[in-house]
Image (cartoon, rainbow, N blue to C red):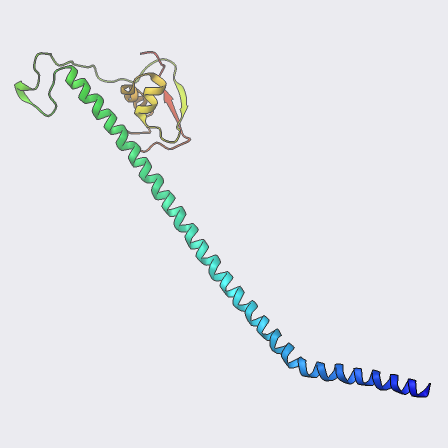
Amino acid sequence: MKQLTASLAALVLGIGIGVGAGFMITKPKLEKNQALVESLMALMQTEKAESEKTIQKAADKITRLNNTLAGNQAVLNQLKTELTRTRAELTRLKSQNIQPGVTGPDAVTEAKPVIKPAATAPTGPATEYVIKDGDSLWKIAEQQLGNGMRYKEILLLNPNISEKQTLVVGSKLKLPSQKN
């Protein structure tokens, strides 16, 4: 029994010495690995911060480009409105046999020019219209009043806007009655 106890004690002592020696051998490797992990974590934090800055710059650029696009779309809508007005005026002139750009006796070839009275603000009940994306004065007059040429009546009822001004989506316009 003594021999068994001594053997058991020697075994326990051997295991303890082995574990201690193993720990002493691996401790520098563990510390080195821990330092490497901490270094990698710091590098990862730096890369994350740089990535977030790059993403923010890209988001800012997208916002600027979207604003530029919206402005260009507004200009395009104005140009479309002007083109539509010019075509309507050309059609009107052709129907009166007036040659655009010609002055003097050759300007009118049979028809007498029509003299229109000075424009006055329309009378009667006015309605409100909320401006939507893609609207122009001509388009609103055409859709709401039945004739694009009635955009001038809208201008008369809304002295705070002009023909060349971009319409602001969501703002309200007064519209004349639909009769005329």
